[in-house]
Amino acid sequence: MPLPDMLAFIGLAALGSFVQALSGFALGLIVLGCVTLLQLAPIPFTAAVISMISLVTGSWVLSQHPSNIQWRSVAWTVAGLIPAVGLGLALLAHLDTQLPGLLRRLLGLVILSAGLLLMLRPHPHAQPSGRLTTLLSGIAGGLLGGLFSTAGPPVVFHLYRQPWTLSAIRSTLLAIFVISTLVRIGWQSTRGELHWPMIEVALYCTLPVLLAAHWGAHIAPRIAPQRMRQLAFGLLALSGIGLLLPAHNDLGTLPRTDQSLDDARSAATLPAPDHRSAVGAAVSGSPAAPARR
Image (cartoon, rainbow, N blue to C red):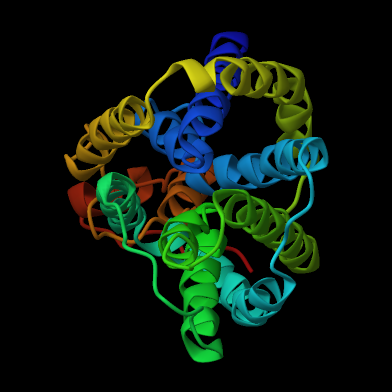
């Protein structure tokens, strides 16, 4: 990755970490949306980097707060999340290869939907949700986690409707996010899709992301929650709308393949046919000399 692109990537990762420290989530969506919009890196590459960044930041933040995790909810969410992440990764590989334009627009739609969910204030239930509802939220989150390394929207919406304290909700969310990133990294390693350039970029992003998260957590009490949500929604809306618009090099629904390039290269290396003997024969009226065996 060129140095200017690398610096821009690191800056966007720090911005996403800062906004997540203020609003509670959106790191993955902001980074993936902005990086894709600016065409700094492909979606699968960026999603892999986000997984590793989220693992570091989530573990660090979780270690800084008292543990008040609702493990029963975590267990049922993860039960749906594990297979769905694998399905999401397979879908990502297919869309990135065959339908890159559709993948870009799907990302834009997910980002806009997440922004709208962020602005909603779900009313808590009187009783905790049942196992099936929790399992379904894990499946939905796992599918998005595999596709875009952002399991947040369905899981956040589900957990914020539980009759728990805010501390319990946030701790449970962080635990689920850390586990989901571990699951995604494990699936990627199994599929042979985790490469050193991804790890290298994640390492470069780690310190700026942690500093931005620390700064955001420090100033968060001074900012009204509604203002935080509006900031996150504005960034998500801009990137989501930008991704829904056609890019200048958008291939639409045409499959992306390197076969045509290979055919062109092969044709370029073939010797040009010699038409001189055939032309001379036609002029003289005599048949062309047969080729030697």
